[in-house]
Length: 97
Image (cartoon, rainbow, N blue to C red; front, side):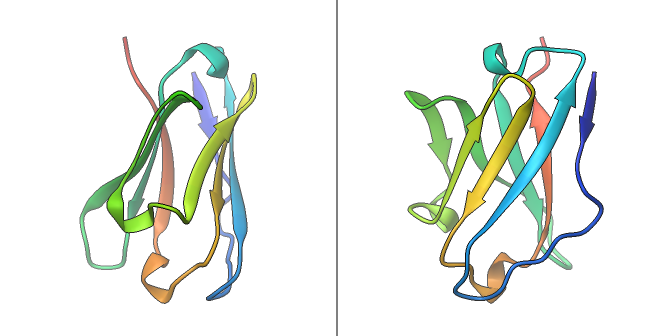
């Protein structure tokens, strides 16, 4: 199982941005996935759990601004109304069985 993300990408305050996590070795469509972030000097914070549009959870800190989607081999993080406090390293993760 391999989850691949770009080394560095950047958005602008007030803007929108989409991150992609390329997944191989398993079917993303049938797997519960997570987006987790770590702001500078802070601990890990989960921001989104996503299985499907009808089975998902979003942290209060990004509610209404961030959402996830996926296809058969990729997980996406769609971010809007970016704030300076959204500055972080974002990680994708899969639920282990």
